[in-house]
Image (cartoon, rainbow, N blue to C red; front, side, top):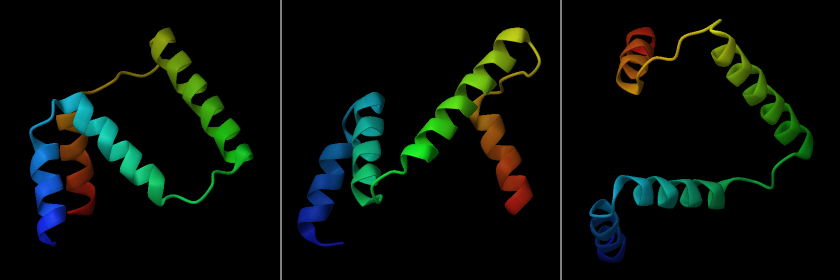
Length: 76
């Protein structure tokens, strides 16, 4: 990592969590190819379906720390 990149990283790391998340999302989005409209529609429908399952009590949300531990256990 060059000095400019390190300086940018250091500045970003002192931002509030939400601002860091927004910055990270913007950087990732800048690397992605133009999105497929059909994929966007499919993901939007998937999100609606999952939210409806949560609202109906069919599934239970878990904290991110627990989800991360479960994922690490499967791939680790």
